[in-house]
Image 1: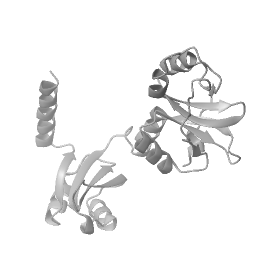
Image 2 (image 1 turned 90 degrees about the vertical axis):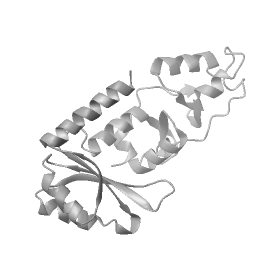
Image 3 (image 1 turned 90 degrees about the horizontal axis):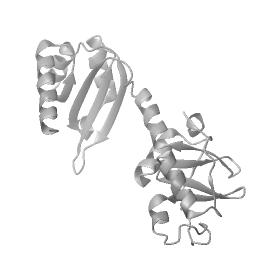
Image 4 (image 1 turned 45 degrees about the horizontal axis):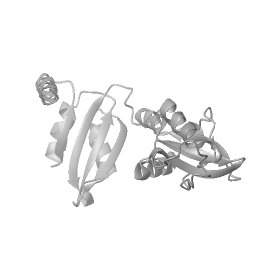
Length: 220
């Protein structure tokens, strides 16, 4: 999947000569903290709300106020992994998209990307959840898949993330079924550390209920 698959262009970019007040009003209306800026047909960059609010005269144009948009963009043929990395590192609420000629052709919002990631992670479908922890050198996807398949489970997706300041990793698995009881015993036999398991078991359901009650109590 590429950025072009998520591309939208129903919001007109700001013109560099637009007033600061207009830009801030547009951000407020669209519930975004970033908007693309063009000068005619030329893409100038991404402007953020914080830089605009620092301008004393909001009735001046962005060019007159000395606004210098950040050169933030992504090509429409790049992968959504590149987009996710850019958006995460910059904490952008939207990222402008340029075509192969360097012309502005649309944007992708963080909300749109989050929705797509949810679909990729099968968040919209039922199933079980397992979170394992292990030493990085012990992570073998083939072995994990073999354990699941031997216990009648199919992995819908698998995500691995290194733990901060550690040589260990955690692995989050979404399975097609919530019947994880056999798999839990097998992972224990292979000496995997199971940090989280959501599955159809009376004891587990009781634990989930207690967890939800605790979360509600802490939010009071």
